[in-house]
Image (cartoon, rainbow, N blue to C red; front, side, top):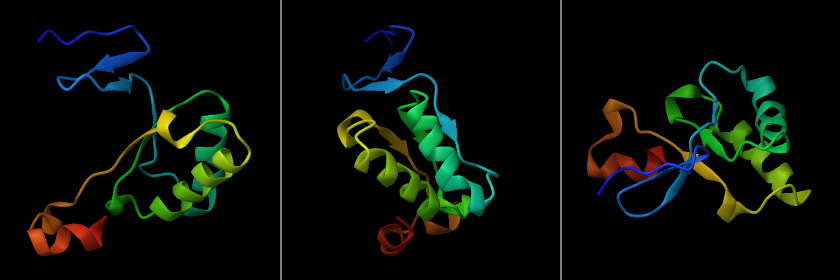
Amino acid sequence: MENATDKKHLVLENGAKMPSVGLGCWKIPKEATAEATYNAIKAGYRCIDQACDYGNEKESGEGIQKALTEGLTKREDLWVTSKLWNTYHRKEHVKAAC
């Protein structure tokens, strides 16, 4: 299947549409992450890139929750990406890391 795009989304093999532009949360200071995430959603971003290793997942979630509570978007319209650090790939570590 050819990877299609409508310039705002990448269409994945399973048909899911992933926003082509998103907020990367790496190196955003914890104290600024909730507001940065909220403001990104308010500005129209619908993709949030996160990872446990960034250390600011909780705060990013707070920004997402604020945007959802205010009705800026619906959860099903957000694409939240996360990653497991290499030391968490064993089956027994995945759930805790997520």
